[in-house]
Image 1 (tube, helix red, strand yellow):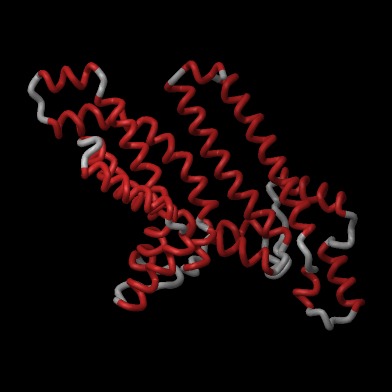
Image 2 (image 1 turned 90 degrees about the vertical axis):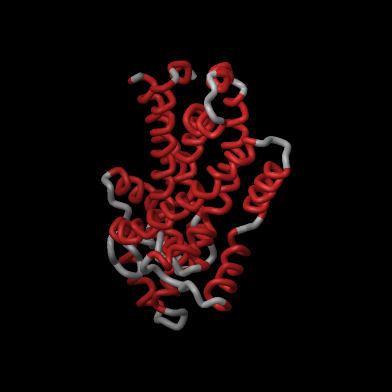
Length: 306
């Protein structure tokens, strides 16, 4: 097991190194000068040169990369070009909002997908199955950049039931969580249906029915527990996807999370903050994958040989 974990850790380090390298060079290829954005295009050339030297942007690109990489190894993601605050401090100040949105979206996804998946599996190829899968397909087909404004128009503008922007109480979380969690619910409901149908054909299910147990008890107590094993894995992997995929949703609802911070830093050519946000999101994503691999290796020894 230790060899298996060590092998996965080596893969994690190589992935993060690739992310750091790719993001660093791509962000420097984006047109625009952060000094012009900070001082304005009409600033004196001497002032621009002084600020460029102060920010370390006058050095060759490969030296900037090596300096940044050495800082990442020490846990220093650099300093924001605009606020002059440590990048890690700004990221950690926005991270709770992203976690809150992710938790709300996961709650919405599970609340919708579990009943839909169970109803579809109880009566396969029936009208109930068709309706449940239709809802799932619609959830997967509707993009968040269309669903979000539609929910705003309906519940915030026409009905005036819910607030539309920024972070506050539970009422502020409902619309963005519903927007982000709908697509995930579509994926999970189909997964629950297929996994539950496979489990319902097992011998121990037929034995439970032969003993006279009711269909509801057979499904909820015996079948669903085993059917949720692959679903739990998908849920774990979706955590990283929700963090990285919430950018559009956060922008639509002006949610102060990592997504809006990343977009703002791209707009202002804030190189250290862009690199820090992407590296932080990638780290969370690969750590979740690592924990999933370890859990699989612990549960199934055959996985450790791969």
